[in-house]
Image (cartoon, helix red, strand yellow):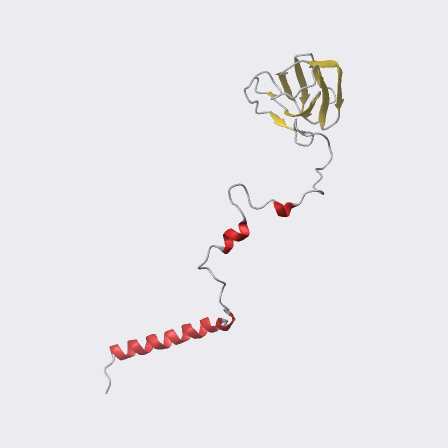
Length: 183
């Protein structure tokens, strides 16, 4: 790689039949994007620096059905997969590419059925008990014994200063008694 070449940051996410690919690079309106069934080549010069990358997809896509949008801040591509299935990764190569990251704004797991929030209205959480292997937390805490409650410490408020003064007086008296004989 030439010293005047860099990789732009590439974000990716997927759905069963679709890939989201975002290239985060400002002033990329004139980017050269070569999209084939098996790969993508991207290049753009920004601020006298060449940004480019090549990726071989995990499985084939439909380049004719795919869409791209070039803006001043990023390039967003919606790439249609040839087969409706979840990919374990974006590329054929299992090697992690430092410039390719997960796009959590568009990410959806294969077990997500839709955009709706889970419905917990029919669940009674009081019947769940403790975590697995822990049993009932209330009975476990009640059986600990020996701890009792905290004593009332309000009577001791401000007593600390008086105790320190008394200790100092006692200490001075002992020092005087041992260092000077009495008449």
